[in-house]
Image (cartoon, rainbow, N blue to C red; front, side):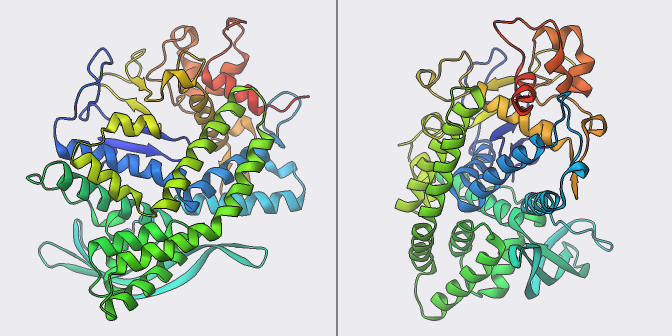
Length: 455
């Protein structure tokens, strides 16, 4: 398990953050090896989230819907360049926005329950499972939650009965944990992965133990990975568990059965994804930094999906190669680049405290930072998210304040001369008068400028 203090992943912005206790560079920013297999597995846990973001239908759908949220936000921007809130949109547009936001929120919601009788749960036993619609619209079910009656117990035997929920996030974390566990064993069989908290990491396994008795960990992982090839992963998980249960009862290998099933589903989804990618490429066909970066992301998603088509569970082959040293993490990151933020010790207000890392080959970009475009998209999504509420979009004057996502690693003149802007209202960077005309503004300023539609 990769606690937030050790490593994190920011979905759709495609950024892995690693804490000072997990260093992959020295104080000067030079690469250094992982100290242990467990440290390596923490990183791979987050890299697995990135893989699922750009190579599964569930992850790609979330990115495409986030781009749609950007389009919706732009329609609320007034002549002054600020969001005026979704309340001024027409009813049909507001309904569309509410469904879109409900899906995006639910797809990343952590359903960890509040326990009233025990403090540190050590086991989870599910006794019933039923599917409930979490997000619906236009007569269809967009996203499901599996609702379970369950018993949670601590090490001393104290137990509590309650209702728990399994959504997309519990599936993603369940897969990442099982892959992390495999990684430790592959890289160093003498090390044992430290078990993570029950919630959200073991919920999928507990549901599988109820719905498909006798299913191995490999089978559970196969069920999760197959279900992520649906934009409604929880509903698909229930279906894959039924397939796995039948395979176990017939004495068949559930992993092989699910691999074949996943290949069929991937083939069924291929044309729809091709159309979606083509539409995005047509929309973002220019030479601007956002257009170029969206096309880069699409290229990576195509590569990831082609790997899925060849092997729906290709993560397992990656781990095998990492274990026998026929593949290095640097080579893997070069092929499927994910930006990395190395957090360092020190006060957050320290200018340039943290390092931004890129594994993208420099030949692929004309900019000094190979990930500049991704940083701009990260800023755009951060800017829009500050306007989000459950039923719509706030005007910019009511947007949530807080530091720029690059506050701890930036040393530009604005960050040094007027840090209050960067710390509280980074969108105001777009109007800072002292930017060099040729060099342009910072990533956040560029993102806000792009988001303002042409007059």
